[in-house]
Image 1 (cartoon, helix red, strand yellow):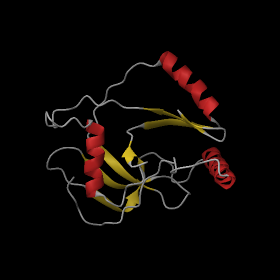
Image 2 (cartoon, helix red, strand yellow):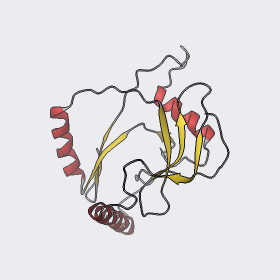
Image 3 (cartoon, helix red, strand yellow):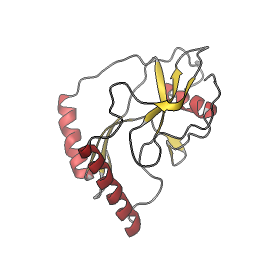
Image 4 (cartoon, one colour):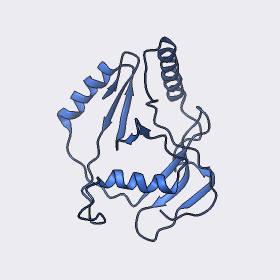
Length: 176
C-alpha cells in the first residue's frame, strides 16, 4: 500500500515468469523491459515513471486513507491464491481532462512482427458505460478534492501518484 491520512492505495506487484525473449545476460525484469520498449515507441507517454523508475503494478483499489488500505491488504492476503494468465495485447489509455471514462487510444499486440492499431477517435471498452455511474463520479471528485487540499497544505511531496493514461499524439501505425 501507499498513501497517508488523505488517501490510500492497495496495489499488487505482478511477477512475470516469461523470460524466453530475454537474453541470458539481460537480467532486466520482463515487465520493466516491456515498459522501456513501449516508452521508446510512445515517447509522449512517460507519466508512469515515478522518481525516474517504473514500478510494475496493478491497482486493486483506492481508499480514504492508508489505514483502510492496510486493513484491506490483510483481508486480501488472508484469502489470496496465485493467479496466472496470458496477455496477448495491451492498451494505451486516454482520458480527456479529469472527467469521464478511460478509452483505448491504441491496441498493442505483444509479439514479434505485430503492428499497433491506433484508434482515432479512441474507443470505449466493450460493455463499459460511456458515462461514469454517479457514485464513481462522486468518489473520484472527492479524492481529487482531498489531493488538492493535501497539495495546498504542502503535505504531499514528489510526483503525482494518480495512474492515468497518456494522451496519444500520433496517428501513424508503429511497430513495438
